[in-house]
Image (cartoon, rainbow over all chains, first blue to last red; front, side, top):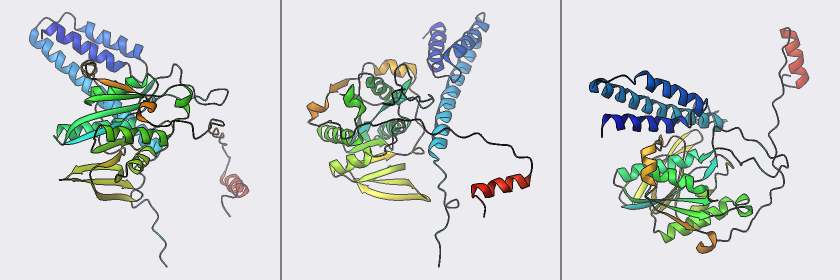
Length: 94
Length: 254
């Protein structure tokens, strides 16, 4: 795959992730667009590869963020994890 | 090699603020973001991991609901499920569709597809029934391992660690079995865009409860759906004496 199409794929993947962004898709899309146009004049293939690597890293981070957000919300909502033995009152001993 | 059936339910997204319809017949679903029930995502992830460990040979995802339920089947396919079955239940029937109906549908499909394991989410975040897995096990007369936080497969049995009040319980049960996934079983993967694209080639079969010989006549009638009581505003008291007086008044201290 050429570097150009790699960049486009990365952009599309990130856009797809942005649809779930907490503060809205538009917010994410503008930021993403700015981040990509900032580097539009980069011509050195090595530099581009490095930037793609960074983009993939950001992608992973966003996925992790979503997962953690969901996990925490559910944990709070259903009070899961509050059943450790210390927290439960010991049965009455005569 | 085991064949696994997973159940996926389309629910209102966990991050959406739920609004009750003005006529109190239900909650507003039109134009609201829906997604796969988070506990079902955990069930799907576990099945996919079992397949990656070469324990499972094929994974089938089932969803009961209107046409849009196919979206969550697609998500499951993108996560690594092999094929989907969409049991179409729509309109009035879907509103009164209960775990009893779904469990019968799942049981029937599990038998038709010769599955060895049924993995479901422990509950759906919309009705919070927490009954489908247990009922499915009862209909099939299979052992049940619910609230699983760890699954290990042996020769012809599975060892499941369960989340119970006050700690963990480890049980062994023979296959075939029904398992329900608790929150800490695993961390589900994200359905990435390339995987969603690839999943479009995977097959989804459409069927109806009638084809499966399951009666989905309503067992319940929805009388009224209401908002939970609103939390009352607090008050700021000037000093400790006022606080003690207030607490005594409310009967919180003797």
